[in-house]
Image (cartoon, rainbow, N blue to C red; front, side):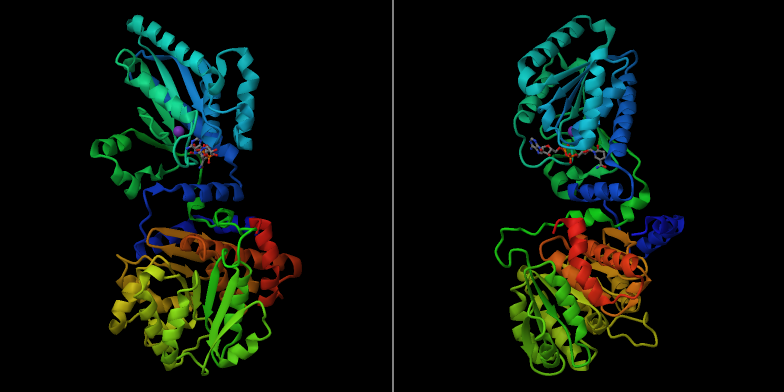
Amino acid sequence: MDLNNTKLDLGNNIINQLKNFQQKFKIIQKEYITTAEMNILDNNCEYYGISKRMLMENAGIQAYNEVINHEKQVENTTYAEIYLFCGKGNNGGDGFVLARHLSNPHRVNVVLLNDEDEIKTQESKENFDIINNIYKFGNINIYNLKKDFEQLFLNISYKLDTIANEDECKKKILFVDAMLGTGISGNLRYPYDKCIESLNLLKNNVNYNNYIDIISLDTETKGLISDKIITFHNYKDEYNEDNFNNLNSSEKSNNKNKTILKEIGIPDYINYLIGIGELKSLSKTETDSHKGNNGRTLVIGGSKDYYGAPIFSAVAASKIVDVVTVATVIPVAIALKNYPELMIKEFKGEYFNKHHVEELASISKNYDSIVLGCGIGLNPNTKEFLEKYLNKILSEKESMPKLIIDADAIKLINPLDSDDLNKNLNEKNKELYIKLFTDKNIIFTPHKGEFEYIKPILKELSDIYQSNIVLKGKIDIVFNKNNIKLNMTGNAGMTIGGTGDILAGLIAGFSAKNDPYVSACAGVFINGLAGDYLNKQIGYNYNSRDILNVMPKILHNYLDF
Ligand SMILES: NC(=O)C1=CN([C@@H]2O[C@H](COP(=O)(O)OP(=O)(O)OC[C@H]3O[C@@H](n4cnc5c(N)ncnc54)[C@H](O)[C@@H]3O)[C@@H](O)[C@H]2O)[C@H](O)CC1
Ligand SMILES: [K+]
């Protein structure tokens, strides 16, 4: 991708347009970010040139300012001693940066929960090395919790006793929780569990609790009760409804009250940009897996008039999943004989019709994802088929695969009067629209013209829609009720026929085993990257076959596929 061009495109104007779009379709962004979303954002920051090292430095400095504020909250209070408990991930890294900034004039103790060589990331290691280089000049001690556990907590109790005895000095001890952040998984393991137990014991001791502050970085490590949480960039998903509902009401208000949100230099527009993060978050091909483990995709499409479309889509999906079947009518099935990588399910006739519904609905259950619509045509029999088929599969929700609705299928679900596309909704089908547009497993992939057909439905259902929409264009917009992102990859060479079919196949391939929204983002991103790669190599004169041919290489470069 040509980042320079992208940068030029990223003025306020685009963000303003995006905000208008957000309002128009009542897109309400969540007030918190999940771990998966944060990981995507991290990688996208890196992709757009904002390194994790920079973010970590900013997080550490922001935490420093807040610690100093906290220290000054009670007049004349000072931290006689600061202990930073640092884990082996980047939460620990934030702790190392904070330790460096605090080390003068404070007395700082960095407590490693793991051995030095277990520190996981380069940026965290670099920040630990700085501490390691300067500690000999005083004011910083380094402990290894596993080795020094008893001695360390004895020292801390001794210091607390001393401070408690000379109460009038208003001295306190600060514990910084830089143990675990968004990377936590499962129950606490040793020594994290023991450390938290010991810190809680001290804090709950009536002789000591006036003399202890506990501040958590980014998230409160499970089980710890801290006085303040300094969270970075966005509230974390401990505030999401599911987790939040598990807390009792005093815990709820307490958690919100004690959390301070701090910016760490992630520009607003990065929140709205698709990048490598979406791709990297996809599940990887399992090398020792059985056929089908990496997904099964069904492509339903083709007609007497168009047979290339379902083939493009199916070949694209076959680069990702293990099994791809094309369900199609006789003229396309004949052409498919030249594609031994694809399985064929042949239906009689030149267009899909209502007689195909039962059998097709019954085989649909055997797939993880379905592309519906490429080359299907606008024949009135096909419209009848489509409505019956959708009603049938949507009524059996438990076995519902991810469903990508593309091309003419988009036009057929709302056959508007062509004189006035925005006029009104086809009321007769309202029940079907509600099912289609309130399903998180459905992805519509319209270009601008096709979008006109679903716009009235979206507006009508703007309070309740849940499905995902990929609006293809120079800049693609991928959105659902709670998310909106832009894709900047791709170039003018991609206006050739077949790229849309390929995109639908890629999204189906990814969504077989992944979140539909992230799959949609990854699909537009990688499709555009393939186009950009070809443009760089051979100029604009490439076609859709070329895109398919380079796809494995592009996937490999970015994904370890
Ligand atoms: N997101 C940002 O923009 C920035 C985030 N920063 C900080 O980084 C952490 C997230 O870092 P990460 O390395 O992904 O995760 P953790 O630090 O939480 O450590 C995970 C690490 O710990 C081990 N582990 C996981 N679960 C357990 C457990 N239950 N018991 C024991 N050990 C566990 C495991 O090995 C993991 O690898 C984020 O919160 C921010 O604080 C950046 O510094 C700034 C930018
Ligand atoms: K923490």
